[in-house]
Amino acid sequence: MAWQIGIDEAGYGPNLGPFVMTLTAAEMPQREAEADLWQLLQDAVRRAGDPMDDRLLVADSKQVHIAGRGLERLEANTLPFLLLQQSEWSWPLSLEKVWRRLVLTPWSERTACPWAKSDLWLPLGKRLCEETVRSAVKGLDRAMRCAGVACITFRCMVVMPQQFNLLAQSRGTKAAVSEWAASRLLRFLSRWLPQSAEKVLLCADKQGGRHHYGDFLQQAFNDRFVTTVAEQPEASRYRLVMGTSVWEAVFQPRAESASFMVALASMLSKYLREVLMDEFNAFWQAHVANLRPTAGYPLDARRFLADIESARQRLRIPQQILWRER
Image (cartoon, rainbow, N blue to C red; front, side, top):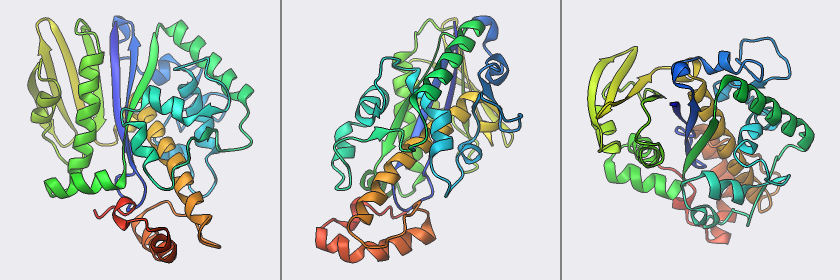
């Protein structure tokens, strides 16, 4: 069998809320190793430019989630992939169960935040019904079986603001946070994937215009020999060799448009961040009358921080556990 892997993130730019990075993995027949999964699973999924219908939309999260219009569209297209992992999960979904199964960050790091509830229940949108989501899961499962796709799974890293600050300060740049999260996901992947896997294609977006990833890959996959194929603006390509097993990695701009797995990683990262931001906003709105929620991006984040300042001091919540300095 072959594997397609995608990595993407959400929340790199904001000053409030977590940074989330997700790794997605699909196991598929060797003959379909480089197949377009949008095409392979077309009975169940569609691209952003396709005609609107009942299929799941898999695209860059910015094309799926429209700010200010609620989470239901993102939830409707993301939750079926969550339920695909554990079909016996009860409805509504327990965030704690999802987290403990699919998030590498310890659950205790979330519950240590003053605004964290003991658990959250998904979906947050009230109009999304279980029947609709489970029907989408069945359609997705059917399409995967027909295409020979054995599984689609994922793992996430969630970096809370205090940890974000520590990482950025220790290395002098917030790019270190992204690299740190990615390295942990890739080390998990290195342990989790069968070493006998003959074909693995890893795809990710380029980080900040950077073109060189060889050293980073060598550290993450220290049992393989990493060779550079090309390092150019349009793509940086590498081979990861161990015996007769040769894996490939490509970093390219706008990878979410080229790779189904990167697009799915974008959606899952965005959804988890939005769920946690909803919880964050609800906590502060309970303590500050008429407080407008925030998405956490710089200009509005400063407005929000000023609005909650009196409550923050009254509750004795240190600013460094909620405000990201970079």
